[in-house]
Amino acid sequence: MTKLFVPSRIDTDPGHHIRMGVAASVIIMVASWGVGWLPQAQNSWFAGTTILNPMRVWTPGVTISAVALVIGGLLLVRSWLRLGQALQLPFTTESGGPNVGSVKESARKHRINDHKLAIINRAIWWWVAPLTFSFPIMSRDVFSYLAQGRLLHAGLDPYGEGVSSLPGWFMIGADSLWAQSPSPYGPAFLLISQFVWFITDGGPEWAILVFRLMFLGGMALCMWAVPRLARRFGARGDWAQWIFIANPLFALYMVAGAHNDTLMLGLLLAGFYFINHGWPPEVRRRRILLGFVLLAGSIAIKPLTVLVLPFAGLLLIWRPGRRITYRARLIVWAKLVLVVGTVLVVFGAVTGLWFGWIEAMLTSGEAAFPYAPFGLLGLGLGWVVDAVFGTGIDPVAQTFYSLGTLAIAVVTAWLALMPRPKRPVLAAALALTTAVLVAPVFQPWYVLWLLPLFAVVGVWRGWASSLLYLLVTVLVVVGVVDQLAVSQWIPILPLRILTAAVGLIGVLVLVFFDPLTRRAFPQTQKTVDP
Image (tube, rainbow, N blue to C red):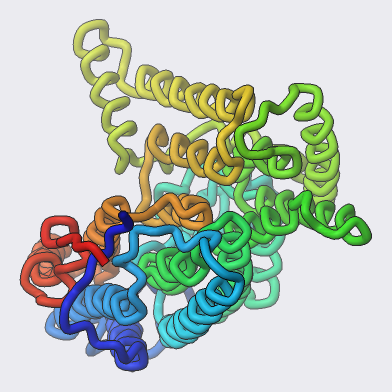
């Protein structure tokens, strides 16, 4: 029998939780003006004024901003959980897929779910609106985008040159990890970065705003594609939208953090939507072609999505439980590669970079700081071998990371070549999960690469969802503690200890003591028969 996690005293007014989320976003926005990233570039408007000195220079103001940032992040998490509870999303263990019963009952459920989806969409836009005007938090990758755009504008090859090739590169704000590292981005995004550099003349405030507007377009594309894919694959579109895009990690890392993953994911998900053998015959060919082109665009933004190519092709020939001949696979894959390859050749020709991204994708470069367990394992192995044989740490670690790359290829090939393949979108999710698990570096927003693919097929449910809520809560705190931007004369360690302590208290309150949010987490859930 289907089990429902039923909380008591649920506030059924979603508008209240949307307003609380807006308040949290405003707190985050203001706090970011104190401890968000902003380079000391000569053409930076804020860097040339004293208007923000009380927040960015004076120790009390910086301390208050840091604490406010972690509190605002946790309040946004609470608003997200409470909105899901008000709409009764986190507690259902059924996928909400094809309804069993009368057509009338099925239509009624679809209307209810569509109404909930509209509420969630409204919450997303209200929550991200203030963050559009924040200084970058959780990451400063947006400044590396700008630096690599400047590289291309100067006629240099971002796949062969680090940003340190630029005079005064450190003034742009890019992390020093990118000093000698090849760009991990595709030629289309480097072209976008060059355009942003050109129209803003490298002014960081204007550049951040232009990038954000583009990334909001990617978010809108995700919002359009996710519920449609969910309905197609038998999952609930409202739930998938809530678990992925309303997720605080999306608002904080993708919008406030200004990451190009929104474009990558928007193009990927829209491409999957159009790659469908079920279209009417009169529009089938051009819509599938559009899907292939969108998928190529995703790869041209961030080449990692090349891993999903074989599964995109399988979408056209896969049937539940049936074997697929290898001849049929080769035919559809050949068509897919022809279209995708043509698009990538065009981008390569326009930028003059061609396929330099392939070599860059296969190496971690100097920016591969091992946040991930696999990265730490590689360094540990290198340390042991170096202690015994004197080989040095790096050669052994890089060899170990190369084995990880080989494992990604093997798992992807196995999933694509199974006689009876898994559902293509699920298989794509598993391939990307492998890539994340064996990467030498892990960043919190990598979770967002996987969420939509699992969500639209109704897999990320039940206890997995509850563990995800805990992971989201923890990663919000980790992002704040790890990415505080403070003046060099303000000691960073005490500030990190303070924000970590405040964050830990907030996590404990949400998980154990808040009588409403604690029901979303595994240790307090109770199941009852409906």
